[in-house]
Length: 177
Image (tube, rainbow, N blue to C red; front, side, top):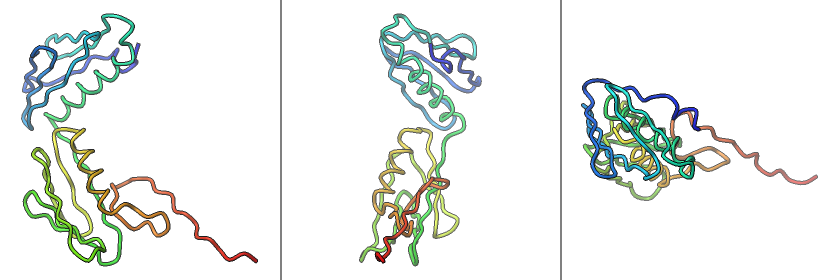
């Protein structure tokens, strides 16, 4: 049994949860999300708690996954998620215009990245911007897509990265003596 799935997921009165066929629809102040349920997993709602249990042992690995997906959905529709992306490189910068991020990251032309529905961006300085969303999976995918525009190179560590991301710098090769 999953250690996390043994704990109930607590949610506020403002969150509305309902079953729809094989899905769990979670609606809150930030938005609404649908979590697809796996057939061998039993999800019960009591007062302000959700419990995730097994129907049969063949679906044991999915109990923790289901718990985590539901927990992330509840947190997302109440508080939301955010990730800050930093741009490292001389003269590299970004500007946020509505749902488009203009990146000038060393190419001969600026790159415009259009944000999908459900993700917004804010910016305080040209060297970084913050993405906000109620869907954790969508936010992570958008961050990965933006990082793919200019990945961090291992020698000077120039590129687009998530704040706090661990990067290992490579040592350059030296001439043999």
